[in-house]
Amino acid sequence: MIKTSGRNRVDVQIGGRLTYVPGLQRVDYLNLELRTITVTTKRGISRTGAPVSVTSTCQVKIQGWNPRNKFNASTPSLGAAGDSTLVVDEAAILLAAQHFAGKRAEDIDNSIKQTVSGHQRAIIGTLTIEQLIHDRDVFCEKVVDHCFNDLRSMGLAIVSYTLVTVSDDHGYIEALGAAENALVQRRKTEGEAIHRSRARINASVKQTTAHINENEEHIRTNESNMETHITDAQAATRIERVKAVREKAFDITSAEREAELLVKRQRARAAELAAELEVTRRAVEKMRLKVERNVQVEADAKLYRQMLKADRSVETARVQAEKKIELTKAHAEAKAEEVRRKGVADANVQAAAISDKGLAEAKAIRSRGLAEAEVERMQAQTIRAQGMAELDVLEERLRIWRESPYEAYFIARNIEELEQNMRAIVEPLVSAEALVFVNQDTSTRETTVTNAVSSLTAQVPVIFDALLRRTSHHEDSNTAGITSSRNGTD
Image 1 (cartoon, rainbow, N blue to C red):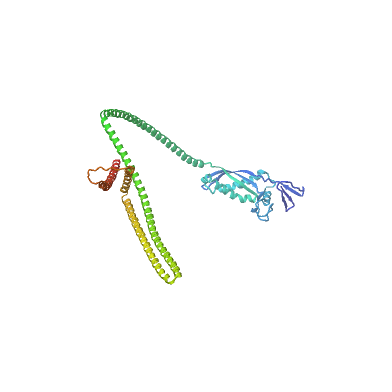
Image 2: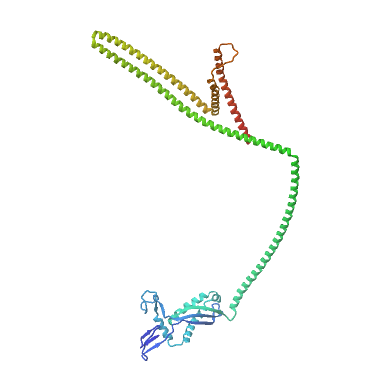
């Protein structure tokens, strides 16, 4: 509602109620609703000179509200400066009231239609028909831009603009469509032809493939039948051959079985010998380590004990001799002092005699002590020499164990067996009451016993030599047997 009071006072009221004085004040109504207008431009000349008719639809309304930031500070508003709220656009409303107050809606629509139609015709003259058809957005933007200022000066604003139809009276657009339709039709025909050709090719390929597969299946069937006949014939031939071989080769089979059994027995024997050799080797190694440890410990301990015993014997003899000498001197001095008290002369004589006797006894005791110490020393040296000799023997045995462990092991084992045999022979002789030696020699009884013992003693090296030879031969045979077994296994 627009209230006019006098010449210069105008009030604008959007919605609500308004009080006015009839006769002094006037109230006009202005519709702010959206108006939909159809604009038709007939026979507008395009840029190419061809006439064309255009029909469009636009929506226009009086600009009653606007965002605040589009106006300056002098514009009446309902919000603060810089705010994005809507403000009343009184200037636009007053312009619209100036032009359209009191007019009918049809007159307002006609004014808008004439304005838009003029600008629409002007834009048609700047574009070709092809651009109108294909670039409708460009056409709409140009029309809106040209109409904006004119509609704004009338207090109006164009909300939307849409190009509806483009037509001509000479069939130019249809000709353009015919070309496109022909192109589309040609593509359609070509596509159908290509599709039919591909369908025929695919059908032909499928038919050919099916025929080839059928032939291949027939060939495979024939080949399978032929292979079946060949297999049956070969099986019959093998059966006949096996029967003939079984009938004629029974002896050969028996010989082969015996050979296989012999080979298996040889392999088993070789495995057994290899196991025995491994057990022997481990036993030899174990005994070598044990002997080496025992020999070293025993030799060191025995040598240390003998040296300690000899040193103790010498020291004991020396201490005893010195004690006896001291005791003798003390005894002699005591007696001399006793005799001196009884009388000088007699004491001197007796003291001299006693002193001489004591000195003689002391010398004798000292000589006897030195002799005993010398004997002990000689015994210690003898024991030490014996210990060194035993140590040399043990070192020699250790060297033999290190150089030839197998021979040393067999010798030690044979010696143990010999000791057991000798013990078995001697134990009955110990419990015997008498021994009778039968000999053809006419010598004396003692000579016969001596000769028998000497004969037995002389045979001991021969027995040891035979044992060594048997041991060496046994070891060589074991080694050869193991080697041959390994060769046979390989």
